[in-house]
Length: 292
Image 1 (cartoon, rainbow, N blue to C red):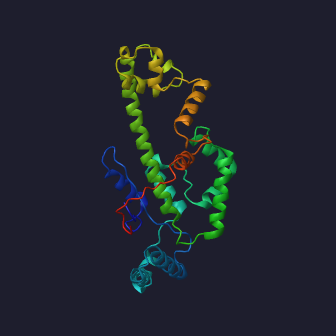
Image 2 (image 1 turned 45 degrees about the vertical axis):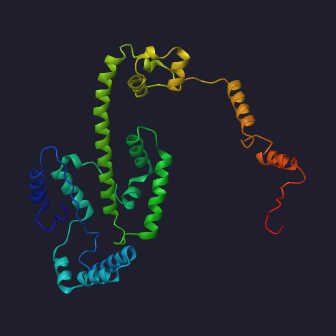
Image 3 (image 1 turned 180 degrees about the horizontal axis):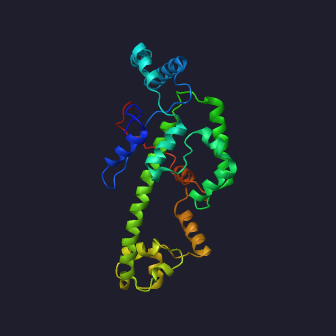
């Protein structure tokens, strides 16, 4: 849904919209918010100029930019915009959380929100989301980037922080859907592996783990087709070659191909030796050749 604020009271509209969603469905609501100066005419003039410039920079369409500028600066549009004030970001978050409890977790979709959160709380948030793989260092990077963005753009309407945040939220939803799909596949994989390798022997091999063991059992076929243990290890890539074997193989390759790395005898020198050994009368002269 896009732009619900003109419809009516969010406390009435949002629950009704939620009732329209099919069971198991997903509702994505995108709406504009009041940055705090919506009732000021200067805000709308600056917004019109910024959006027209953005259209021109992205498409080089002067006509489209002029049409947008003409629309946003039309007296009737300005009158309608002044009478239709959207909620502030804080009020919008509160109303959404009241209607959709599952979305009531705090969001930090703007650089200002990250800076207000602070390094300690942001570090805790990142550590929780990353299962403690990331922490204070990443929080510092994010806060430094947020500070640079605020210093460069401020709250200029041409920088659509909330739109970018909505795109990231969509990416997160897709990622979670993929993770849920992977979980279902993992359950099916475990059930099949339990019957194919009763003793979980494949997973006990060095270099294999939760996914590698079932993958090996699935692709190796009957174990009897391998004549020996070393043959099986070579097939799976688990065989570790001794250092002397690797050196011997590299030396053989160097001797067979003089241009291989490590060779000190380029191929062209052999050609030069062959040419120098030819008879002095080379190339041969023919009696009936042109000019004879």
